[in-house]
Amino acid sequence: MKKIKSILTVALLITQIGQSQIVDIEKTYEISRKSKRGFLSGIDYNSDEQTYQLTYITKQNDRKLKYEFYKFDKDFNFLNDGEGEEIFEKMKTKFRWFKFRDLLYSVEGVTVENNLMGTLVMRKKLIEFKYDFWIAGYYRKVTVLEKLKPKTDDGRKMSLVAYTEDNKTGDILVLAAIKLKLGKNMAEKNPRPYDLYFMRFNKDLDIVSETIIPFETPQTLLAAKAIFETNEEDPENPGVESMAVTLATAPEKNLKPTCTYLRLGADTKIIHRQSFVSNANYWNLDEMILDQNTNDMYLFGPAVDDLGKYSKGKFKSIQLAKINNKGEKEFLTETELEEISKKLKTPPTQKSAPEYEGKKFEFSTYKVSSTGDLFVSGQNYKIDQAGNDKGSKNFKDIMGFHFDSKGLLKSQYGIDTKENGNAAQNFGTPQLYLEGNDGNMYWMIREIKDFNALYGKLLTYPRLGKITPDAKVSDFLTIGKSDGYYLDPKYPFLEINKGNNIVFFGANKSGKSIWFCRVNLK
Image (cartoon, rainbow, N blue to C red; front, side, top):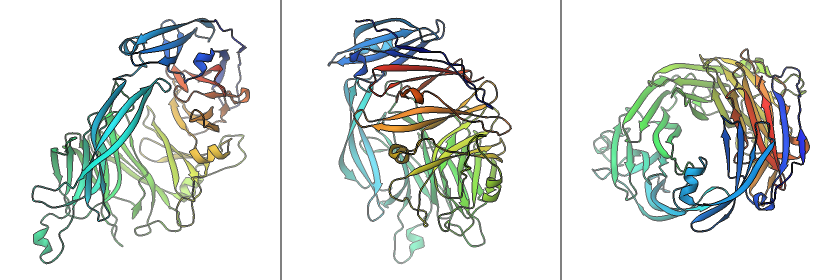
């Protein structure tokens, strides 16, 4: 293979007032025409040798893959390149990033919905997977087959509350309620009308296991979240480890609703059940946040004391609950809009001061720090006076919320986006939190410059800001955008020396010239 020469080497030492993040090294390198035709398929970092190998798959047949690779030292100086050809099974052993089960395979599964009469209807489905080297992963084709109305042993019909599909096995977990039998003697016809049923069905629509969850009053679903287990052969189709559900009683004029948190195992057994009285009449539970390190669950969302609804599209507070890994409620806090406004902070040189005004916003990401602080961020978008979306989302400012380990708000952060074109407004800005070894939290915002319709990918570049333990936010350092290089959609960055360095990967718009940038976090 023709050896390619480096076209640009730039070493930058740029600091900004109030920032500890430093762009240490930034370089580009020109790859072959074969490599640029596809996406970056995998990155291997050897921590002992401190070398990077970037691999591009260039051709595929029924048994083998051809690829080209480029190897660089710790400062992204070119070391060597090469090409190879391997059967699929050998690729699995040669590259850790190569996840492969079969070139073609299928899984029989189940999907579920309520019909127009509110009756739970299940359908068989066939999921067909085809490996594609362009994305180094699988395309999915789903075909829905015949339907069935499941019933309890005594023949009563059911109504869907929540569900999650296990794409690894084809099974489905369903939380359902009994449809009440109407007419005379309703109490006799419906002896336990408010109990819920948690069931696991296999691909043949047989009930594998079932648990009855008793309730004495009717329940409304606030949120449900599937908790997945890894699937090493196909990470994009994980199995289900459990399901978390939060329900609430109907609010009354002088009585706050009682919320019930459930953690339900894949075997349908109840792992946790915890009930508590809400501080607000109406809680729009945006997200159930699982701390992967501790297995604690956080329940986050805006709330209002107006009975049963929020008025004129505006909430009055944010409510946050923590359920620990033993299923116990550790705290339930409510922060009023006025206090949220008082704790607004923005980057020092940012001219505007966007803040949360109580309207709906799009949840984006979260992070629980090693000290127990919770960081949650999302993005404003346009809604009408009734609180409904106005067509496309039309995303605007980014909002961040910083809570301490007791659930008390430390700060609200309002961040302007630099890009406001059609792509940025339609897709929303990807975000991520990374905790540094210096005790600070680093907030990565991937600004959307454009959308590449040919490859179906967003063209993004990173901005990086710092949040200190005392809840101050720095200016955001823009990385790489001025030279026209954009982050790789599959491998945008890699943490090196965890908590100390971030390495960004990308390319120019044509994909011919690849880009490296190492940022020191202290």
